[in-house]
Length: 448
Image: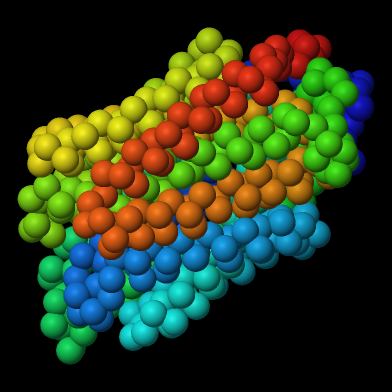
């Protein structure tokens, strides 16, 4: 229950400096840990992209098999995303995040013993099923603690962990695979799954002790600090005015479906970069795995920079729609250029194009997530975030399959890259056609 007026708070509870200190304490308590969890999720989700470099030849699998396995992750994601978010609402964040993290960590380890395509498909499906609900769950969890005007930067830090994981994870994966090859009779790609699954299990166990479900349950906050949170969240509810509270009501809005499709188009580009980036760079002559790891780390570093810079600019200019559209357009342009330079066999052209696409595509994601909360509230935001993420992430199923199929049938990646670039460009059009401008949410006018 929130406190509806500043009169209900302890004396001095509305002093700006005190409130700022309270929310800094909350951010430092929650954000580093959930960011670490998201970092590990991405490390375990995409390490298959590096394992592919030797795993496919060892198991004698085709690109079509890999594409299907990489993509089926998102089917599990799609099926279990909404139930996971509903469980978080009912059971609490720490229990839900513990379940999610331990589950995918165990699945990652089991990947080391995969031998057949069927086993590969099952484990990738389970990986998606366990991870389902993590990102929208954390986004929902933060709404319990932080008002919108304090949540943007925290959310940007959290989401950017996906890019950081690619920056760090690419050279790390290459090092693990090279240094452990043949150790104890296992291949390097097997050790990759073993080594990178263990930290996720440990983080899942820690989640139960580190996280607190709601401010009212936080023993590490005083009554005065809890009042700061209650006052600002209540003031935000009043400042935002009427929003759609019914999820089924939101489905009658074209804007809701536009939000889903915009994110679908962005994820199509992102999944291409994540699951086929190493293969695209290898295609133009970077065959040494360690060198490839550092090259991909640099490409994904541009993605991290895109997230940070675009998030900063969006906050500074208090504008979301245009910044999301511009970043998606840059991401799509990068994919088109990568397709062109692949045909030209230009190593530097492909690398720079992928870096550009990474900066744009990844830079669009954290800014995009500020859009749904401006139109949804109540049960609509609980279920809506999960539905947006789950349906949109089906693009992660289709785009790797498309690239794998076209590579197997034509021997080239360029046609698939061009098609996915067109899909990402579609996001730009839908943003301007269906998602109108929204006034920035003001800082609550509390007594000072």
